[in-house]
Image 1 (cartoon, protein in one colour):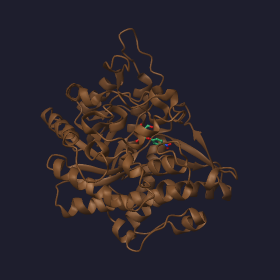
Image 2 (spheres, helix red, strand yellow):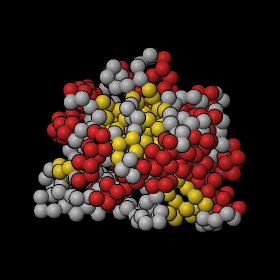
Image 3 (cartoon, helix red, strand yellow):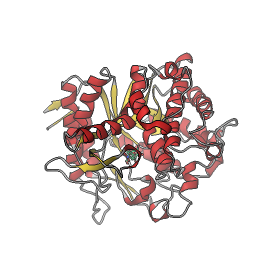
Image 4 (cartoon, protein in one colour):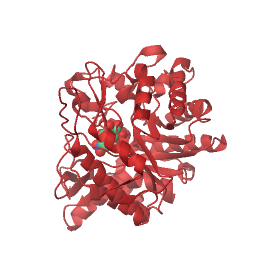
Amino acid sequence: MIQFSKNFLWGVAASAYQIEGAWNADGKGPSIWDTFVRQPDRVLNSHTGDVACDHYHHMEADVALMAELGLPWYSFTISWPRVQPRGRGALNPKGLDFYDRLVDTLLAHGIRPKATLYHWDLPQALQDEGGWPERSLTDRFAEYARVVFDKLADRIHLWATFNEPWVAAFLGYGHGIHAPGICNAQAAYQAAHHMLLAHAKAVQIFREGDYDGEIGLILNLNHVQPASNRPEDLAATERVYAETHSIFLDPLIHGCYPEAFYNWLGPHAPRRAAGDLTQIHGTVDYLGINYYNTDTVAYDISGGWLKARLTPYVAPGWGFTTMGWGINPYGLRARLRDLQTRYNNPKLYITENGCALPDQPDENGFVADYERIAFLRAHLCQMHAAIEEGANVQGYFVWSIFDNLEWERGYSQRFGLVRVNFDTLARIPKQSAYWYRQVIQHNRLEC
Ligand code: PNW
């Protein structure tokens, strides 16, 4: 039996583009995802987020359902083009009002809000100016952050600037898998650097504005392990670690850049202005960690600019999720221990953890997802073991409350604790939702 501390935060997470729908309602401007999903063959089955779960129009009922499921915290993200349709200047009062009502509805149901400013849906108008490789976007982001803080920070006290800047920069600008679909290594590193700088500017506004609460950054830190002890495999693993961890964590926490890695990258390394580092250093009150899977890394001369080949690692007795990701609960513990030793034991929240599985609904649409329960239980047990070993983890959020649009994979992946029928938009809690309610209620579980 493992027991969590009295103040441990329990919640669920979702993101704007993946659930809201209402893509052009009430004055919302287009985002790079609205553009991307309309281009041929970018998204599986040409699925779009035009409707998604239509959370925008079901918000009140959705919050009532969260309350029924006993959820103390809800982590959502704000769509920049809903608030500021062109990414600068004029605000869209109806867009801001949606988040205002969401926060009030959550609080009225006794659910605490956690908000993220950027989960990949950049206003298209800013992409037309060059997108994240353009340094001027850092000031646009800071302006947007101030607007949102002014409206909502009286009631939201837990903030994140960016969700997974690695994904936004590298899948968006480096590999072209996500919007805006650009393949340019230098652009990706430049975008990542600008996201860090934009983060720092927003945090400065938050701190100087004397808003009450914590602000941090969310990173996807999957576990990576070398395929062997051969020096070339160790070096390849270190490069993957550098791209996913060090380029963000070294400046944020140690106040330095991973220079050896940037030298190795040569022309792909980002341009940095004097003073950027000072501005970025020390700008997280906490780190959000999204953990899903583990990869084994081998040196491979054909392995892209990192010269690395990643193979999913599956822990003994486990298998793959429908994403093709290897399940490895021990990887979560290893990640947390690594942050403890390499990055001064920062305050952490697990801001996403969960799995996409081949859910089989019965004739009533009910899913008895015991595999998802096993996945979540095992990860909670490993997280708890890391806490016992000294990792400073203060909360945990399941990805996700609802089945939703899994980006380039469309609706083919089901991550929810609640099943969504995308024809009728009916929501039906799965077995895992009831299991999670019990865990939260008792604040403990059997490992
Ligand atoms: C995260 N990768 O995405 C996101 O924050 C969510 O929006 C998403 O639905 C969830 O995880 C499940 O995929 C990731 O390629 C996407 O390493 C891709 C990667 C990692 C995280």
